[in-house]
Length: 83
Length: 207
Image 1: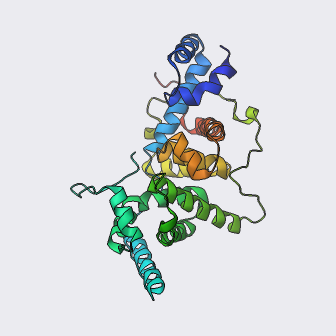
Image 2 (image 1 turned 90 degrees about the vertical axis):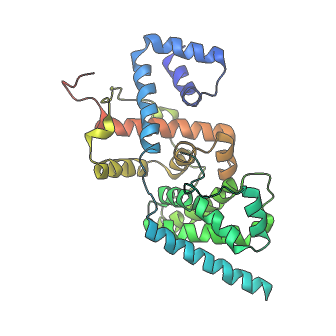
């Protein structure tokens, strides 16, 4: 397996959505190819860092304000359609 | 991170019960759906639009559209996937309005495979997040993902941040499964490459 073949399979490898045979081939490649090992590891960390980052959390006060606005608009829509 | 966020102790009501009640005009049931998914929709909207005001508008408009069109929701897909589809379309529409000079499309596929090939291969510090304060880290992550084309960052956010499956992401974005996989790989590799300069192991740092 070449490095570019490895990279093509990287997403399925990280998501664990591949057959056992391909997984063994990829892991064999990782045993001896330091570059792919590093790319694989740091890509995995990239995903974890974003997943755990709590980027763009919705603050409680804004959350309440938005929900109140949404529900009020839904009520308006409901009363219009029922009229 | 699971798609459903509920308060501890809050009874989990079957989603289809809530959707059916909301479809029959039960605003209280719809409010529970809003509570389940408002944080997710806000995150997705902010990731796509990169603008707080737009994200607030997207949350309101997406939920209102969902309420108005619940009659068309077939129930073949999950309510959340259907809602994400509405929210993504609203977010892309706002992004186009703000950047009329640039084509904004999920089909944007101008980069070649080579653009995603790793250029710098360097090991990272054992705990790269701890090299920065929480605020600095958020700034780095936010600016880094901003640099990706909208189609790439949308796929990355749905798959890797919101944990939708490949199939759900394809359905929400009206893309084929191979297109989702290809964009996801390239988004992941490009983000990794851009984060290298912040997270790589410094000289003298022990393994």
